Each structure stands twice: as C-alpha cells, then as structure tokens.
Image (cartoon, rainbow, N blue to C red; front, top):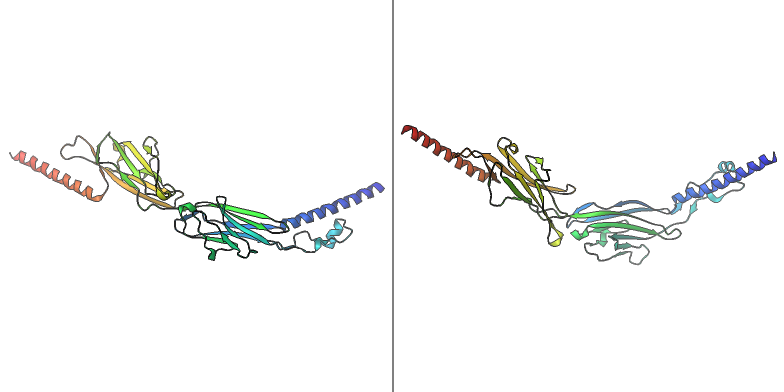
Length: 327
C-alpha cells in the first residue's frame, strides 16, 4: 500500500512538471517576431514602378496558451499557484527592416534613428523615400538592371532579438517594338522536291524571345526542319534571337493549293506574343504545266500581280490556239 501511494505521488509530480513544460511551450509559440506576407512583383515592364511589401507582426502582449485555471492545476497535482495564469507582458520592439537585391543592401528602416529611412545606391535601384516606410518600398524607373532576387529582413530588439526574412524574384521585361521578321533571300519560287529555307529574326527584347515555326497552324517539331542560331546580345542588355526552317516541299504541305508558314515570337511565360505569316501557294504555270511551281508570297499586292500575269498568259494561249484552228 505504501508503494502504491508513493507511485501515485510520483505520477502526480511528473504530470505537474509536464504541465508546466507544456505551458511554457505554449507561451513560446506566441512569442517573438512573425513574418506575415512578402509581396514582390514577379514581372514588371521597363520604366515602370514596383512596390515591394513586407508585413510582419510583433507580439508585445504575449498571453499565450499557458494560463492554467485552478481546476486544471489541481488535476496536474500543483501544490501552489503558478504565475502562468497571469499575462506575460514584455513589449518587443522593432529594430530594423532591411531590403537587399542579390544580397546587396539598398534600403534600411530603423524607427529609433534620427533619420529612420536610409537608401544606398545600387545599379538599377531608385528608391522613392516619400512613398517608402517600415512595411513597403517603392522603386521607380525600373531598368533591366533591376531584375534580381529581393529579400526583406526584419530584426527585433530585446529581449529575443528575433530575425525573420522572406524573398522573391522580380524580372523586368522589355517587349520587342517590332518583329518577328521572315526572310527567304531573293528566292520567291520553288519546284516540288526542292528545299525551302527560311529564317526568322525576333525584335530586340529582354528576356530573349522564343521563336517557333508553324506550318498550316501546326507547330513544327521535327528537329530535322529546325535550325538553331546563337542569340545576339545588343546594347542595354537587349537580345535578338534567330531560328531557321529547312524543309523539302511536297504536295502534302498544301491545303487547297496553299501552304501557310508562320513564325511566332513570345516571351516566357506568355507576357507577349507576336508573329508574321508568309503564304506559299502551289500554282500551275500557263506555259508549261508539266512542272509544279511553288511561289512564296508575303503580301497581297504580290499575289495580285502574279494572278494578273497568269490571266494574261491564259488569254494569250487561248488566242493563239483559236488563231491556229482558223488557219
């Protein structure tokens, strides 16, 4: 019986200490600095402004879940009142907020300083101090140099000296002013079985444009038909890309006597998309219909000229045939 009573007292004491430990752990969950949200634009266009936001929470009054009432204390075998039932109050203050681009600091906010806001010169970064504070930073006049990884770092003062951070990447986009352009040299017509070679050139952009060929609105995926060329880096970080198309023409490429070839340029992800289309038509020459010809046309005026020439040739052929019968 004595052993049973001793075991019961030991269990009560153990449960009591477990309760105290759990109480402190519950309090510690609500203490300290918390990072709520970090908002960094993923994509912005050149010359635009970007608002970077960093929202946090400082727990000045940390009451926690460790407050135990009398019945709960008796259940855990407490012999005296613990101060866990009282609010644990110790105000934690913000020390600083710092912003970095590619690990280089460009903005600092220290509320206790005589001049709370301080910015540092970094290429591609221009801070607007009138619209920046402890939760946000406004960047104006973005350039391609503004692209990079942005990090917000928040530090608290005593007693915990907590520190939290969050980051995200922002890319500055430059959309091409023109293009893409299809070029085929001086060659305008092909015979069945000949190889047709075209080149597509994108306008200058950042990041580099992705080029794709379409044949009758179907994406050309055969690597034997695609020719890749190295990109050209221009001034101010802009990039020009090139893509070639090489294919042997045949009757299967035509739908009602017409083959449509299109080059499409896009920025990834799809922030911008542009394209140029060329028309390749299969025509039967009026003079000699034994050879099927392919005529590459890029605008309506050229098609009208060739159509007029074909009609004139047909009229001359009909006139000569009729004159021969009369003779």
